[in-house]
Image (cartoon, rainbow, N blue to C red; front, side):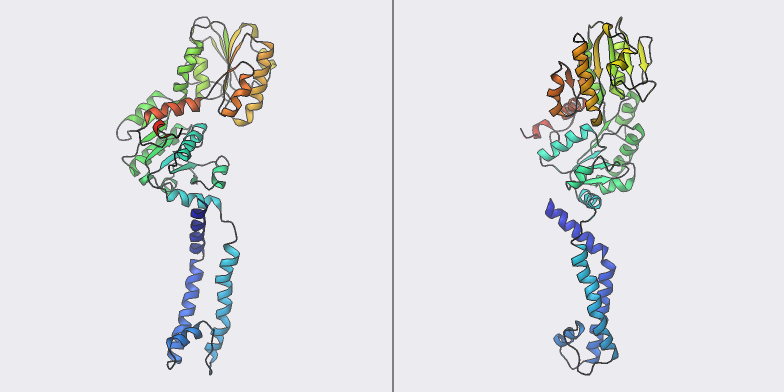
Length: 387
C-alpha cells in the first residue's frame, strides 16, 4: 500500500509541475537548435553538451552566453526544486485517497460512514477484497485516510464523486445513509452509471423500499431497525409492567411504539432531539423531549417501581460514559428492572454485562442479515470470511 501511495503521489507531483517541465524542455530545445545551426561543424554529442552548458563554444556570442547564464538557473529552480522541495513534502492524503479510489476495479463501494460501514470494511480487509468509501464528513473517515485507504470525501449525490469511486466498474454498492433523499438520488445515479451492479440500500419506510425495488432501480433495500426488532419482539413478548426507551433514531422509536401496542403497558420515550416519531402515537406512548443522563431525569417523569424494562439505544461513541453510568445506577437501585443496551464496540460488551444488562448491536445483526442477502462472490458473504 505504501509503495502504491508513493507512485500516486509522485505522479501527482509530476502533474503539478507539468507546465514548468514543458517550459524547461522548450528552453533547452531552443538552445539545442541554436547550437545545431551555429555550430554545424560539430557532431551531435558536442552540440548536446553545449545545450547542457557542460561545454561552451570558443567564440560564443551574446545568445550563447545568455543561454549559459539562464539554463543553470532554470535547471536548479525547476528540477532540483522539484526533487528537494516537493518530493520531501507529504502530499495531501485526501487527494491521494481519491486517486486510490479511482483506480479500484471490481470493488465494493460503501456510501456513508456508519457502524455497519465499519463491519463491511473489516470484512473487505479480512478477505483482501478491494473497496472504497464515499463520505462527506472528513473527520469521520480521518483514520481511514491517514491509513492510506481509498476514500472519497464529498457529497455522494454529486456525479463527480461517484465517478471518483469508479462506480462504472464496481462489483457491489452499499448505501448506508440516514437521509432518504440522499439514498434515492445515489441509487438513481448509480443505476444510470452501472445498470448491472447490485445496490444494497438502507431504507426504513416501506414505501421507499418498494420504490427502490421497482424497475429500473432494481435495488435491494433493507432496514437495520426491522432486523433488530426481531430480537426485541422476543424480549418484550408477554411481558408486563411499564417500559422506558432512551434514544433518538428509528430503531428507538420502533421499540417504543411496539411496546406501547402491548396490553396494559405504558412506554416513556426519552428523545432529546425529536418531539415525534414515525408511527401513530397512542395514549400509552409518552414522549419526553429531554436527555436522560441520570436516574433523577427518569424519576421526574416515571414511577420507577412500575417499570420492568429499560432500553438504552444511544449510538454516539461520546455517550458511552453516560450509558455505562446509567446502566450501573439502574442495576444498583432497581435490580428488578431488566436493562437492554445497544453496544457497537464489541470490546465494551463485558463492561455492560457486569451490571446484568442484555446487550445487542443493530449493526452486527444487520451485517449478519446482509450476508444472507448477497451472492457468494460478495466481499461480505459469510463463505468468504476468513475464520
